[in-house]
Image (cartoon, rainbow, N blue to C red; front, side, top):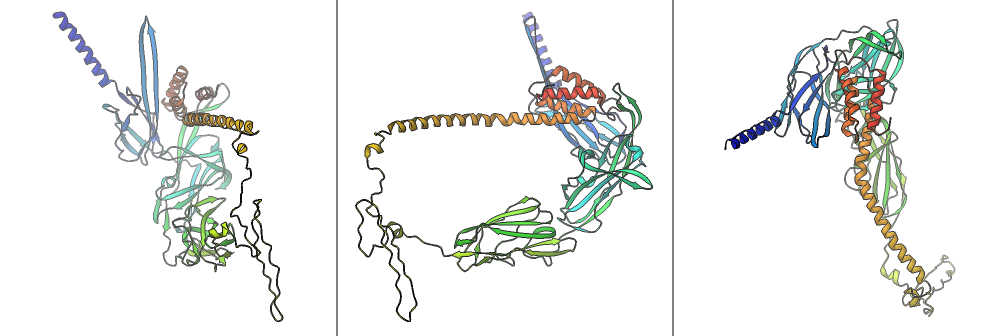
Length: 614
């Protein structure tokens, strides 16, 4: 009895330890790069969660900061497992880790507390510690300027407005530039404005502009300029801005934070790398953009949202000789200097400048257009209602000219039409024509006969000469139209039986082949999207590794690849990630570049993960 009680006590102890492990096995930590931290310079944070299940993905909750923006940039899951057999005993080990990447951007100096971050999955939960950041002010750099230019005059809703961002760098400073990050609050105001890209410059001269979604490279044009008697390198980025709301919009000034190398060293291969850098900041002055709504007075019925200058409307018809009720395919092509995305068609029937309601009928509903070669093309079917229609009349199209502040109208060219009466064919016309006056009978051979046309007759003196010609319709009643009368031949019992047998066998084989092809295509359609999607992601991440400029970016790309790749060299990957993490979170580790040897290792490993070989 005593032994049984001891056994129960041991069992209870094991159960208690098991419950404790399941309750305490989850943990969450917060990692952040070493300071100093500055206002208007994003700070990267990582929340690392361990001990959770692989699926579903844990959820992270955090209170919004007192000021500034805290955004989740991405998630990197990692799953490691191993099996060991020692003296016949099998032991399994599995590790699941989720890394959540956050970015905090503060717009002013001072202390800010972030966190704690709460990670939960079902009934499991883990909480990180809080972190307090001291955001300081970056010294202003006197050898650089940033300018954001857009029209000063009031603009209108829907108008396409050119916006130009310029960064001026004094030529003596260019060689010491290690990196830069620009911030343009105007580009982040997507609720008030829409933006279009302008193809200009190259990616080699790209400007890096930060946003809540992360950093993005914008192709820029590099030129030289003179200012204050000195030579400057000027990087220019052009975009098109389209206001969506009327009112006065306060536009904060654009800014650029430049990283200048002040101490350098050369690697074994002669590469020049910075050992100490400093940050310099330059900002533009805030501005106000006045946006006016379109006037209601004088707005024509043919206005459908087009804003710009010099619009033209071209209308073409698929055919011009029709009968009443026949459909006519019309193509309307709109061209001009303005935003085609907001331009649509006014009502096509009725009103000033539309098709007359008594002459034409068009389908109900709006007509969708397609932007092609700088213009917008619309296609619609119209029907003519009576024989008196002689043309598709000029159609009106109106737009608002923001430069002149007035509505303007253009007209298409008319299209001549020839409209005939709709022909009605009766059953009597098809079955039987008028019997010949000569009383000819149908030949026994089964060939229908035609009556001879009457000769023209001439009226008497003083009359008008008239010709009358009558053609009788063929008489098919009673005719035998069979081409072959031999029943044995029609049933395949004649000399062509061998041919029919081959046709029959070929039909069976063709049907089986079509069935096999359908089965193969069905399997391919189920398997290929997943495989091709994974390969596409891996190819994009290989490019990201090649373009990475810091240890943190390299580690992030490799972790994302490991989560997608089918075959992961875990040993090589863990060693390289450990090296990159040590560099990224070392004091001032995020300010420098990546050594060539380390970058080469990362690229080679990325290609292995993508299945491209080394």
